[in-house]
Length: 522
Image 1 (cartoon, rainbow, N blue to C red):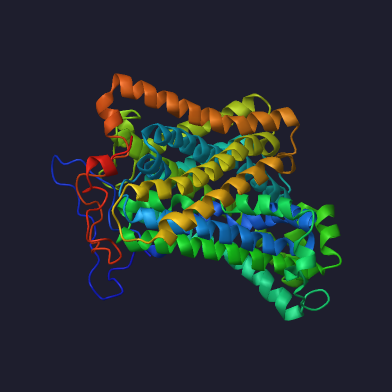
Image 2 (tube, rainbow, N blue to C red):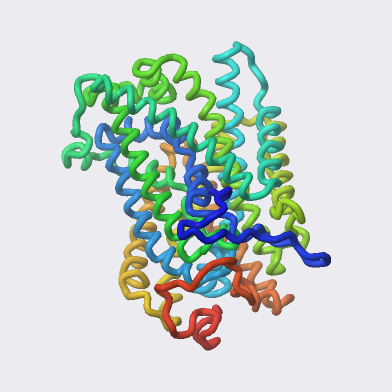
C-alpha cells in the first residue's frame, strides 16, 4: 500500500518532496506500489457489479460451462499483457495506450488512439452514473420504501467522485482498497456458504467438461467475459506515480488479470453449485437480477443479501473513481504536450493531483447526466448502455491496436527482449483481440437490448472518434508542428524516482538513446 515506509529490501521509500518556491508541482512520484495500482485496475472492472449484473446473462446463454469463458478471456488478456508490459519497460511517457501506439505505429495513429481513449474512458465512467442511480434507487426502496428520482443521485455521485479524484492518489488508493475488500468479501462469504453446504446437490465439476463448454452460447459468454475485464490496461497510466515502474507496472498488470480471471470463473462456478447444474440456467433466465441475491439469502442470510445491495453501490463508485483517475491522467499528459488546453496540465500544489483535468471531467459528466435527465431518458437502458457500450468497444479496439504496435516498435529498436515477447506473443494477441472485438460487436444486441440502428450508431462512434484524431493530427502538424513533433515523446529526464536499473534491459541504447531514424515515430 502507499502508506508503507520501507521497501521489501528494507530501504526507506522515497516520497516526493513539496515543490520548491516557483517550481510547478508535479504528480506525487514514487507513491504507488503493486497493490495500489492493482486496486485501481480491479476496482475499474467492478467485480461485484459484473458478477451480480451481467454474469447471469452469460450463464443463461452459455449454461454451466460459462466459467471457462471467463478463464479464456483472462488467458487472452494475459497474452496481450506480455507485449504490453515488455514495451512498458521502454516507453516512459505517461500517456498510456496512445503513447504506446504512437511509438509503434506513428503519430497519426497515436492521435487517433488518444481521442478514442478519452472518448472510451469517459463513456465508461459517465454511463455508470446511470447504474449508480438505479442501484441506489433499488437499495432505498428495499431498505426504507422510499423513491428518489435518479438525476439527484447521479449528480451527487459526480460530486463524490470529483472530491475523491481531487485528493491525493494515495488517498484514492486507500479508499479503493477498502471498497474492493468489501465487494469481493461479500462474494467470498457466498462462496463459503455454498461450499460448507455442498451446494444444491453436491459440488460438481461439470462446468469444465468439453460438452458443457463447446456449446452454441459460448460466443455470448466470451463477449460478456471480455467486457468484464474493461480497465485492466490502465496500469501504465500511473507510471509517473509508481515505485520502480519497470517492475511495478508488469506485476500489477499480471496480478490484476490473474485475479479477475480466476475470481470471475470461481464465483460463477459457485453460483452454479448454489442452484445445481440442472436448474441454474432456468433460474438465470427467470430472474437474472436476483440470481446472486437469492443465493446469498439462502446460503448466508438476509443480512448478507442486504449488504450486497450496499456493496454494489460502493463497487460502482470504486469503478467510477478508477476510471475518473485514468481520464484525468490522460488529460494531464495530453495537456502537458500541448494538445489539450494548457490549464488541464496543472497539478494541485498540495494534493499533487491533476485537479483541473478532474474538474473538467466532472463538469462534462454532470452536463451529460443532466442532458439525459432533461430529455427524459432512462438511466439504465439509455444513459448506461448508450455510453458504456461504445466505451467498452473503444477500449477493446485500443488493446488490439496496441498489441499490433508492439512488434512494430521493437522492430525499429535495438533490444534484448527476445522474439517471444516482442513478436510472437504480440502478434497472437493482436489476432485474438481482433476476434474478441468482432465477437462483442456480433453479440452487441444481447448487451444493449437496442434495435439494429441504435447498435450500429454505437459501434460506429469508435471509428469516428479515431477519424477525429487523424484529423486533429493533420491540423496540429500544419498549424503547430512543434506540438506534433513532441507528441508522446519520451520525457527529457528520468521520471521514476527511486527506480533502479532494469536488469532485463539491454546494455545497448534504449528508445530515448537510439538514432532518430529508429526511435522517433512518424
